[in-house]
Length: 595
Image 1 (cartoon, rainbow, N blue to C red):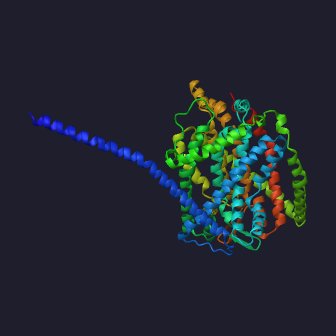
Image 2 (image 1 turned 45 degrees about the vertical axis):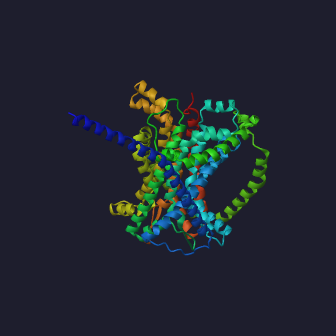
Image 3 (image 1 turned 135 degrees about the horizontal axis):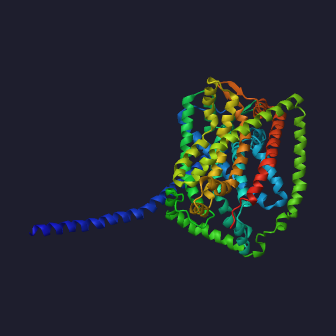
């Protein structure tokens, strides 16, 4: 009788002694986890500092002519590091340019049409058309340093990344909800306050998703930017793109697979460490009144937000600096942004003086030099270029139709279902970032064996390189649709067709137009690779404008290169004026979110 109570008492005593131990362990874990995070942040900072030192040594050294690209797998980590640095610098430059250019185009009515036309022209110019001028200029600026070649490669990657980001920011500014603009005017926001508290947050979702597709576009053109021939000169930079191009030219399948494996690893790591936290952070800027319970989540973002070191740095440096800037700009309410059209139309006199006195003579001189180059182009070459432009136009249209047929429904499904987005978004990012030019040798051989040819292959390569512009913009548009509209559609039991007609298509329309515009320009840009491809010492061509531009680049025929580039720009600008610009106006007026 006594043993039973004694045993029960003993069991209770054991339970009582174990419970505090369990609690203390959890408390120790909660206390040590922020310290572990701080150590990880500190190690990342040291790694970044060491990377800066390595890059400074390479760029500050003497030029390295006739670089031999090793196909050994042991060289891949170093090559991958160099390529990631070039991609990162090109992206930061693209982001700054996109925000500045989009802002100037949206709020200066006098220069808006000219700036958007220039953006249309620039996005349609192939990377290879920028190549001679950019590389020769950078080498002339830094003749005794490797920095010239490296900056040239960064600028070439920049030309493959920036245009859709600039279009996205411009489109977001033009579709700002009217009530938010009026609220910023009532509270007398300065231009700086309005940019940081209204315009950048509203454009964040579109910028994030277009940044992803921009980086993917940079990977697509990385092979052309790190290894190319200009006349009799062979330019090579050690990197992942030059490794893949060397392996593809040699037909070395194991080396291609190793390079693609490393690239996919970098893309997956970038998605998990950068894009997923940024997407979760940008979800807070959705324009809605009903919060979505199934928002995007990121464990890494939550961990970084709980870091003591980062919170202390933010609280003691960034927050006081931000408050000083806001206070400094807010004490002058007379300089707040005005909404009337007259204030937007006024251009400062200094800008006009610079435009007419400095820019105009430079443009006239460049035109005169271009006319001198065009004198060496024969009439037969002009006819061939015009016929080639027609052939490339047909391929571009087919690629856009095929891309839209699957990217619009797929993008809406991904944007509407966060659980599906967690699976599909990394896969889409990997697929978009893997250069189709690295896979094209295998696809081309399969097409030739099965009775196909370069005409089908060119359309396929255009499709692989441009469909992601539409997909990522549609995903951004579907995510940006306010949850209020979705709740109303559920409340009134809309059919599937009613949802698409009244909620989905109007909601994604501004983003879809941006995606189609950039995809069209990207398809024209990709034609220089799709219609002219080297494999095992043999050149495969499909008659078109891109093929003639690539051939002129290889031959050092700058007159043909210039005329082909001008013709391609004219084709793209004409299409934009007749088709895309009316659609942009429709997005600004009829399909603009407003209460």
